[in-house]
Length: 275
Image 1: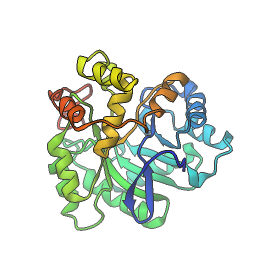
Image 2: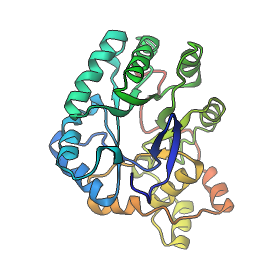
Image 3: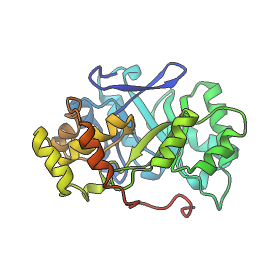
Image 4: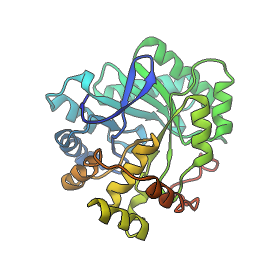
């Protein structure tokens, strides 16, 4: 791992870099170059998914890098149409093949897809993958407490992470409190609210004082909350900017001011409705 990036302990000897590189909506043709640039900038945690249709590009970038496999943390995800026990196992194998990896560090159920209601069978498949040693950790994405409780009530493995939409306009306080109670790490997707808050006066003012951009202030806020965070960009300069956040120390007044920005605003789908 890159020693400059703080890590979060997922248990069983697995450490996830707190800052990663997200690949949602990055075209396959651009993925290898984007990931290679991310490696150059210092990122070691890469987040992809079957849905993104760019796993092959991630695999190519890994294969062509001179980085040791154990220094990387690779996440991919099970798509809704592949949910179920056998279908989840098959889908994982296809993802692993596209990535060209012997093992994946973290495998997530991408959405609960409640109308389909196969995430419990899917979870049992993920537990088998964990037992088989082809994944190091298993978790979920976009799950609400009622979905998480059904998995926890199975009495087996508790998800180590729940990757959710989270940014200053959608702070997910109750869900984060539930995670903390159950020992689940919170990971934020769309952590910068797709740039929609970069002109917010509170974030701009904090940035001016710290000589940082609003994006850097938001990422520092995530890190201080203890979130794992996966900003996405294909621009090398922006990658470097997003990585230059570990020296930021937000004050209690800063954190209090940012807390006032929460308005329950989503940039993406509602987990109760997407199937």
